[in-house]
Image (cartoon, rainbow, N blue to C red; front, top):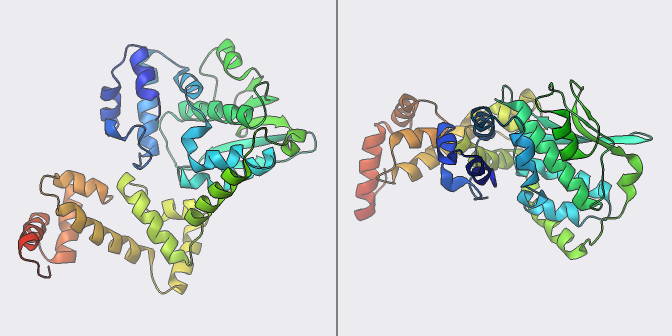
Length: 330
């Protein structure tokens, strides 16, 4: 999302209209502590591309973004011992940036490929998001090698949406469409190349930080953490969480059962706690509370509150308000 509003403005559009149309708060842009639904970002980018007549908007945006937007993942990648170590670090921790995407490294004798995958089904304007991502990945390779890096080939699963010159200008490499995977193809020998200007201390700190985010003492605690992060953006279903953990949903259910709990139970517990927090905010609309709890309709919030507390959301809010002056159990 970084730099997208400015790019839209530069081409005569009103970014707030596109963001609001996708359900995104303008204050969320550039705030790494706020989560934005991947599908909402795709809708913003794709709608703007259509209405502004910019088929290459994703590619244009990629030129305004760089690896730094990945935060600690960027620090790990640009300070690893080798290009291969940096790429493997990105692959391992990419889900901490967005659970909607994954990457893979395919190593061949002469050529290898760094593949990009959107794991969410039915993402709108997928081609725009893929072209944005491959553009950023190309920039990542330049940063990890040198400014003269050129890919052997860029591959897209989708059909061509911009002119051949546009792709050549962006990637300086042949581009293939209707391919088996979305990928940047490069010489395998590049993997062993040392990363210029690497900082061992920065790498160690980034690895330690990401390791703490990645490592959990038990699967149920990991699931609870992921539910807390993904619930406000509507991506906390069993399938969503299992996807982040690279597990089949049934396998996740079995592991939770072995831990003496269920996914539904953990989700419900988190919703109860979050409902108390949100309903304690007097002016927060109930429709917003429902959305942040992962409900598509306010009526679902009402039914859940009756099940949890025995009363309506408004009654819970009134009781929580009274507790501020006269604390007592709800």
